[in-house]
View 1 (cartoon, rainbow, N blue to C red):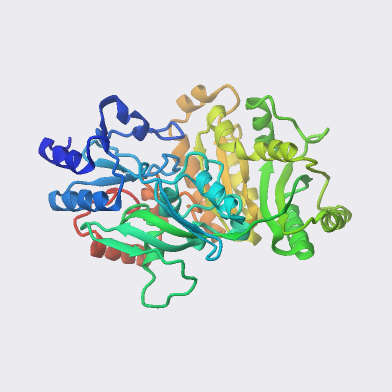
View 2: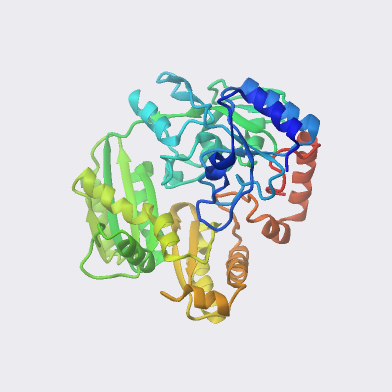
Length: 468
């Protein structure tokens, strides 16, 4: 439990509207996947970097742990206080868009700005912000940067790291790093921005960022294809990129199980095809001008090569939204189905087929009743694996195999590493994967990470227990 005198001092710094306690803390103790619950008793909600600075200085002086909170959508439990001895620092009230410039193709925003609001601001000046996530209505840019979020448009625009030009952050001792100029080139020493991005609040608290914008796309085609295999999906991607170039904006893989779960749990959705297939792709082609003729030619070539079994191109924005809903509701329908374990894996593109085949085989060898949903951002090698018990038998299965989640995780991680992959592609380590990182991480890399942590946070107050 937090010492009362420290709690009162932190409340005073935050102001009367800047803290929450009691029942109001419930939202900040929730895991979006419903697997664990936090125990935080005090939520601080400062509205300026200056207040964040005073809060961190106080925490550093008193040895009080502080856990940053963005939109609460993280997938690795890095935003949860497991013990009730720390304070949670929510950046939600730091929600101002400080500037947006068409000439600089840049926008400067505070950490609590929602991703959807950045998209709207960029759209208002004829630009686009490349980061796109299914949770964009609730996730915040501070959390996106802290976890180096990926999403469905990484293929074209890159991860959050690639879209950040400048950063403002408060360090453990309360000092403020301010480097928000919209520079594309700055070679004046170490790039501290990239040290903080992806650090999950363990090295500093991001309070604002300057983000790179791109030209708006005037034309968009959405296609949903049935493909014979993940390998064929990759060949289709290469065909489209060879024919159309970098206008291939998103390219997502779905399994037959994924489509079935979408239709089961979201009955308003419809199967685009008369027949069921083993694998599907949903993709966006977006450019400065209409590409329909070029897309038609590319698809014809793919059909002729046997890369596509069936395909539909959305005839309207509404139909495009319906096709994307089959993929973007994956988090919800996996949760509703009662997922036992969900992974966030990346492997080299050339290893995707082998990774899926091996993982499916090894899971079946351990327990043939398991169901595995493979899906994700195949264009950048990020494949999510969600594993389920037999239908309508989850509780019985867990009674029979209480170690299921740990065993499934080990099977997937082993296959991932044998394919030269990563056990965390875009969700981070948080608290959920600390033990896995210790087991599988490179010892030299981990030692370097500990040295950096010690240098920037010698008292260990920043998100204690996360990442390392």
